[in-house]
Image (cartoon, rainbow, N blue to C red; front, side, top):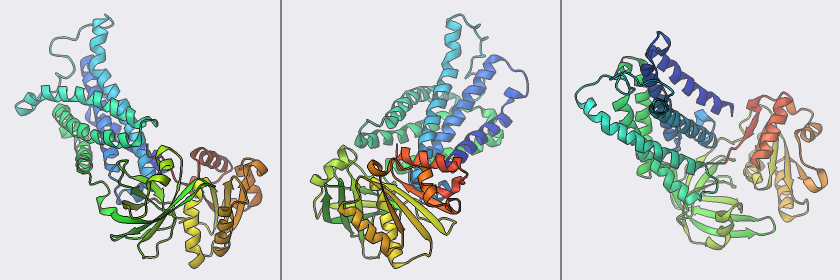
Length: 442
């Protein structure tokens, strides 16, 4: 989470500093119309800067993923950059229209002729000709951005429609690049801010084109065939085995992949539950958590062709300490199952304690988990809330006094993970020692 915040604020503050260096707004007294023009440009620069980076993150780049801390972190950063872009777009629109409303209401005097915002950037030739259509395009794109970003943030908006409407933002972004290049203050082109924002918009434009041509993740896709489907109604889990027909680069325990079952829904992320044995087989454990996943047991058939894209994620147990504490709840056990399968054949010598929250100690999956943990030399502690109460950080610390010299790996409900992270942080655990997958993509 710290890396997300650092990246976000470094981008916003960095662009602000470069803008201040290019604009006279703080260096001398200037009339209100020029202040308005400067703030219109500032809000536009920040909006386009964060939207450009958000576009680049949306293409699931294997080169960018390690620097953010995993694709899940990239999507979380993408979300907050999108929200920031929306807020700055609203501020941009308000600075363009607000003073006119204030004049109409009698709250401020009418600016002198030729001094209204938007007239202060002197240009000639082609740029002057393009300014009027650029303003019209910007206004239309503002309304489109508001609608599309708000739809993306609404959890109840169906995922299949979200994928389609979100793709339209690529078109809007390309139109906004035209708007920005034509209307940005010409004086900025002698300063670093213009070149930085131009580079960001080039990167964002390339990502937008990749999105429009549906090439996101194309180099990481493999076609496979479902060769087994097993339902476990007692725990609400669907087990799907896929045999790949294309080359797969392999994966580490704890990573996930996007699986498209070719039903018009679009790809969904699922943790890979099997270790890679170079035999072309992948296993996914899918929990019914919504309309789509609840319907999969009846819709999936052996022999169905699917597309698998990945692997992604950095939940790969590469901690700095020789002791690890694993905490899982429900389907959050999946990455730990994969890791224990790996440790059963290739032990790494680390002392590992697994706390698993479940509804009952006596169901068959728990017994299977016990056997797997024993083979992997992992000390399993099954936690049942009805008997043991709600698991807390204090419960874990009481069992493992050496917790400060351990890496904690958590996979489960986001609220539970947030509580544990804060609990351990308050007790002095470094942020870098708590690892959690942020699996929400919107």
